[in-house]
Length: 151
Image 1 (cartoon, rainbow, N blue to C red):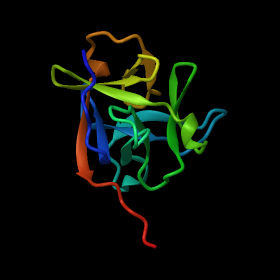
Image 2: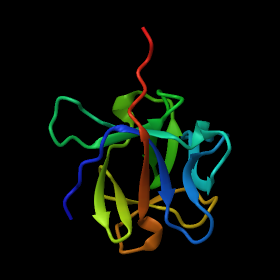
Image 3: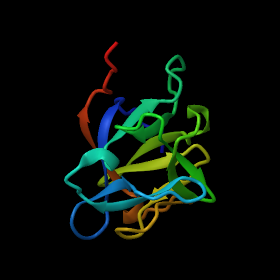
């Protein structure tokens, strides 16, 4: 399917897995390639569960998107060995994503065409060859525009 545009802004990213609401979540501990990204229940503090989705290159029409933590603008999503991490590396090293409409939500695809998959709550997000799987379906909850820093 063709990629669809997404409004740049602050989001919660809901995983379609069985059970209570699960959100894309940055874990609190880091390993070699950054902090693993998992799905977890809604936390009372949104620090690790609110994300900024922004176009990768503002001057390029149809540009893919990058995703970073809303409260840590230098901490972007990166894929390594087909697993998803959040890491404070230069923006140019962040993984680029596109979105495709599927039944019940969206499929999030990396720049190399792999889909984000949430196997179960607490499991690290993996990138897989896209299949019509419920665990590869996501919902974006728009929370507002990208916050601007005060001068």
